[in-house]
Length: 232
Image 1 (cartoon, rainbow, N blue to C red):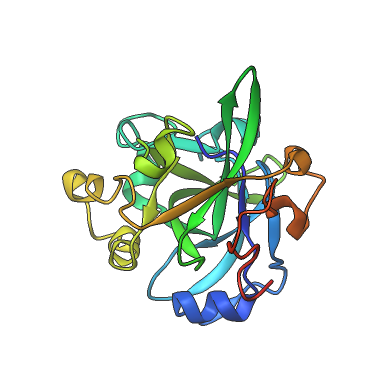
Image 2 (cartoon, rainbow, N blue to C red):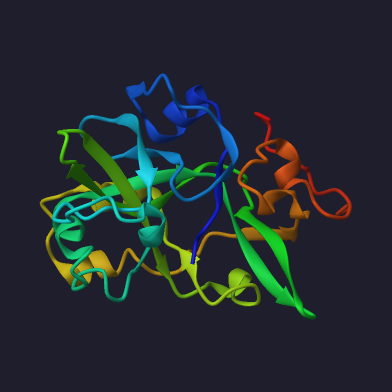
């Protein structure tokens, strides 16, 4: 599961990293993105613009908003067949931009928040799906979900699921909507082979109301481990 993540890079860093032509003016870096928050999304690789969608997918056929926070994740193993996701999987794949995510590790009767990021500390893209839901009053609500898969070795001791992190080549394939071969797409939804680093953080992150660089500060000093990416 992926229930909380970060996107702390400023707009110019994201534009450089992902070759974006435009970034939504309302985009703001965040150290504690929670379900129902607006998240940075790229939906089309030929028109490379960053938009903001609500995290928690509302299927286009839904009769009401329901609870968007219920569909924040989609299991990669069943995404092609589950009713809530199969149409979006075929037609509306997207990138959700991030630079780290949180998981809570069971430890001696308590849950310890852990922060996980690329060892390079660079931004990356989750594999996502998006939908446009038309409300009864005519409002178009754009929402998204993040795909999950089995964990890589670095995450396995923390949680039994992890979000799908796409490689640079995988991003282009994921956004190529002419690709309909399920097996080819399934090959993109595997645990990342990129080196990761993980460390425990304080309980500040437990509340979505807290959004500062202290959310990713190590709970205890970790020797020479830099606290924050260069842009923080």
